[in-house]
Figure 1 (tube, helix red, strand yellow):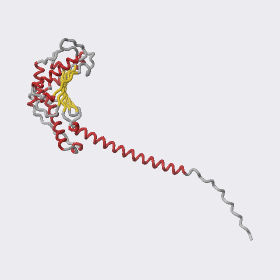
Figure 2 (figure 1 turned 180 degrees about the horizontal axis):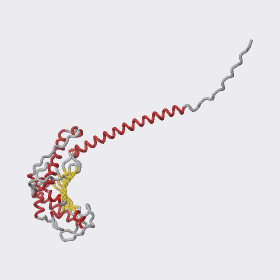
Figure 3 (figure 1 turned 180 degrees about the vertical axis):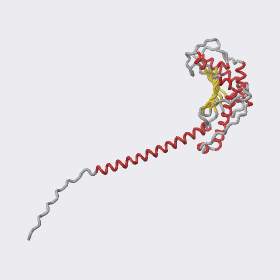
Figure 4 (figure 1 turned 60 degrees about the horizontal axis):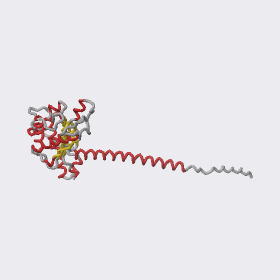
Length: 265
């Protein structure tokens, strides 16, 4: 009887000790995918947060800084007789979530500033065209900047007659400002030294000019508790004091109207 040849046993393969690499690679892939999803989600949320933040800023602080371009009218220079229509500020999602009383106050303040900006721009139109006056706005703030030469003789703090007449028209628009509004008058000079018996420094000249404007506003019926005067001397220049044009630009009086911010109460 024939015997079958015995099969040779297959050689024993050594155990693969690197199988963990496949599982580790899968884990890394999964982690990478997870981080990609998290990153995409965070980017989306951040965008949404930015939108909410912007709408909140718009709701509380009105329009972004801007310079009003006045429209020529038949009558100029009479602030209280300008009846320009003022568009109602848009209501944003953030504004709709404010308490009603706060939202109403905010809307009223914004409309008051916008109306005043339009009227002052019309009043100062000839001087704006000559770059002697600017009327600009910032959040809940209106800024009127006048060359000192429009109001005062050089080196003096007594108003020119035409300067006083102009400021009285400005004051007429401030008389009926609602409670909570503040008006700050700021005086600035160039860096040319002054040393007189009346003004020992530029600081004293700038402060005295601001006080003079405040005193005229008070005499015109503006509430004293809404007013303040500040003098900065030569320490906040707008332009280079090394030129005549730069020094003229630095000699200025700035009237800043602040509306109350309901969020600060």
